Image 1 (cartoon, helix red, strand yellow):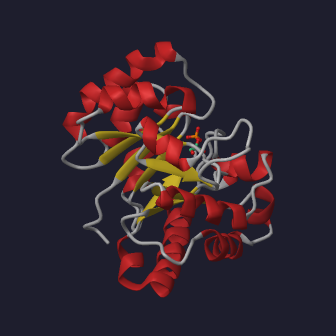
Image 2 (image 1 turned 90 degrees about the vertical axis):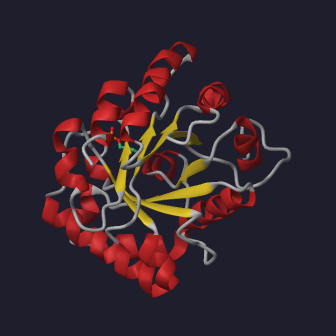
Image 3 (image 1 turned 135 degrees about the vertical axis):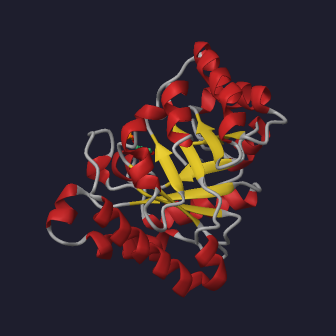
Length: 250
Ligand code: G3P
């Protein structure tokens, strides 16, 4: 799995205004330096996708993604945005099943799976998030929770080209806490074995991201762990200097 090209993805969550274009442009300018080692993806709020994608057009180094989509292509769904609309705006990937969507919007594994299939229907990559809560971890259920989410959230047609899996322990998100390198290694090995068992050679090549309090000071250590093929970054993806420093730690 060492030959898998890393993906450094930024999830801006509900942060960013049109004035944030300057920060995005700084990322675009710095992306060329890290392009030899990793792909970069920035997922701003939906309001900024089209403007950022226009700026990034033609860039092989940095692409623009979305944070969620509706599972349907169009219809009477007030306030929702379809994968087709995100593709039209210039997105190349969609994060689905983030723990904040699962927890705050009651998204089930079944819905997450439908959203991943919606991303594919629109020709986009699905970045499916999984991960245990503190309570589940304390109860020794980390691997069981991850297995259950993988089983139910990943559509059968997943390939190394259309699917990225992001492991984000919920307790590590935005807390400054991270699992030990040994814990990350254990969970990522478990996920890799699951993916190989289910998707054979494709599973061996799928990108497997770690997310949760990744920052410039811990990125090199986390990215060096076996079966970690990149990062999904929240807070530290808002500033070009931090985001590029993390990408440059490869
Ligand atoms: O999707 C990325 C995110 O949940 C991690 O957030 O702020 O801990 O890097 P943060």
